[in-house]
Image (cartoon, rainbow, N blue to C red; front, side, top):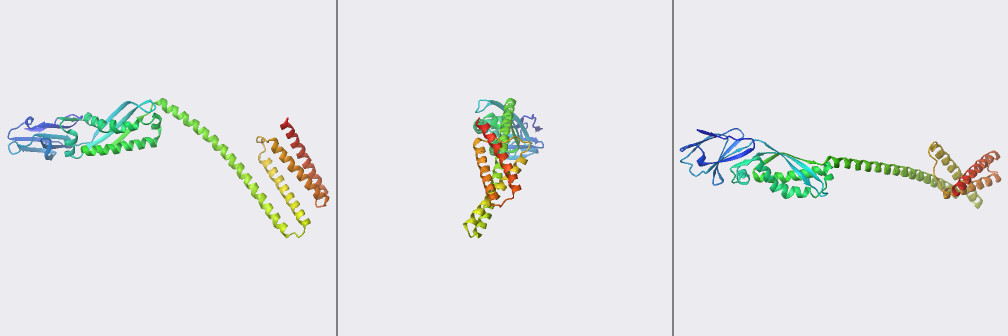
Length: 339
């Protein structure tokens, strides 16, 4: 009579004593597809037969003590660790999915089945917990707060660490890891709180970037204006070198001041046009006093030019009216600021 292995899906391996197998002179076994049959002698593999139908002489093979039959198909473990307490004293569940298969009968027999009559899936999970999860993985996980596990990169790094450790343990047990996943079940209320905080942080960052952009734009305009001013001064200095008398030098310097004045007027005009319709820039009394002093100096230079007949009467009148208008406007603003 041939002995078949009758098992359920939760059993990975089962050991039969010599006396439990029918037959006196011949012991017949049958291992189906994805089943592997080995003959043991006092806990060590005496002969590995594989799958198929086999006959062992009860007289000639008196030394064998056990027959171990194992399931070599891919097996799946799905388990959950409940209410794991984290560093921040908040709790979460952790889901595991592990797929594996028996690959080395000798290591599997000695290091995992050991002296068990049957090896159940729950036995494998218990050994994973005691040899890896509780011993190494969980203490590392519990060093962190719940919200750390909302970060994809952190979860990936943690998962890879556990997976590498599990591969090493399985190698010792004669198993091959085919698939591994771990899902950190962060409570919904923690997810919502984190999303709100991230939203606030992004909003603050947007305000900071907008302010930095305005400062950068202002700084860029000031730099351009400064470069233009330096360029004008350089041109005038080059002209001054060609002058032979002090009078020529003074006239050239006045020309430089007039050119600088015209440049400032043009820049002021462009600035006023660009800011048309926008909120009026806030100026301090010091800014207004500085601007008033510059306008009065420009007015004096213009008057000197007129008296030296370097400026036509019509142009002179037009410029003086413009100066007076701006001086009155700034003095009014300054008085309002000081009041």
